[in-house]
Length: 169
Image 1 (cartoon, rainbow, N blue to C red):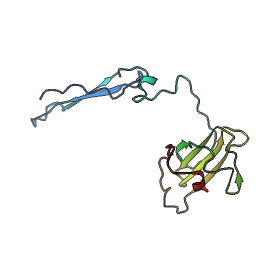
Image 2: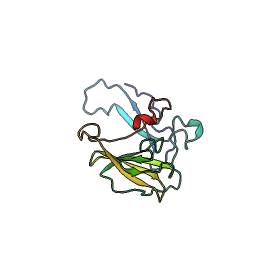
Image 3: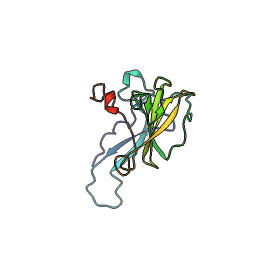
């Protein structure tokens, strides 16, 4: 049968020379002839928008930019699988937890690292503060319960989610 129109480009914006999108088209094949060409064709494509911008932020994720820096700020994790930044640093640990003093007002963020090797969460408190940054590990009491083979972590950032500071105490 006849070929369909080409699909839209798989990338909406922000392609590079190394990374282009893909388009495909298809057709119905009604013969069982072995020499018949495949019913799907693909081709590389360039998205309509070359860069992501504020006007199309629902379709594009901005790049890091031409220069960014990756820096190790903590170590000693056991097969880290994911990291997430707590939306309310200090809310979970407070100023005192498990016999240790924390400084939630020092440092800019709190990173939670999911460890696949020992099924735990490591909380890097006061991230970025040379004097107060510290790490504490939390394990599930039932080893094969919630944390077994974790692959990702995320936080609810809904303002009115009925979770309060007192519910963590």
